[in-house]
Length: 228
Image (cartoon, rainbow, N blue to C red; front, top):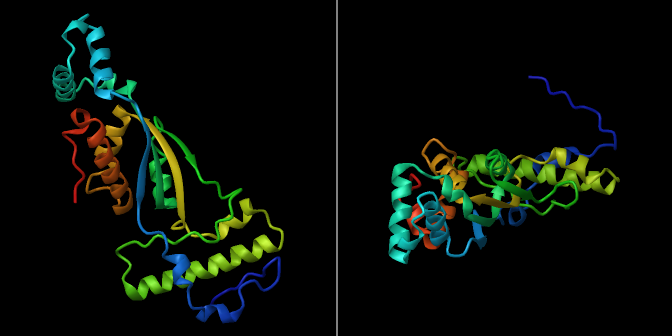
């Protein structure tokens, strides 16, 4: 097989010595796994949802904490989830790849702010480790990531804008984002991304979101599970 090396516009950026480069493991593996933090959530969300539901039947006088919880569970069982849209939660999600972020941001009813590779110097970002890549293959992936990182540094030093230099970075590069969604959309995200058909990384995001929301609004999320 013949390999064609394209000429570089800024000289020999990837010298022959880089083919046997030892990866900077501390940089490549420092991500530490998926991290999800609840930044904000509608206070007394279950009471708010129940009150909104009672408006349609003019039955506000029946409110109590226990009655609210039971009503919310009935709404879930009946599939009457529109009133869940009055409650929202905001999450900081870190330690995920841009591949995972691309999947998550497809949920159009949620709002997102993601760390920008146009403005942020991302040379110290980790490479997220897919569990299917065992030792030898993962070592090769780390070497490739290190080469891409060094090329990114070279491009930035040569005055190439970060928004253009980022094109050489792997899709497995670590990123972080903020997500805001109403409770109905969160249930949809957890159901879809928590199934066995979903990829391992976004399934872990769904699991951590579910753990947090069960503490905040157990009657809204009581029936959901993330498949192992």
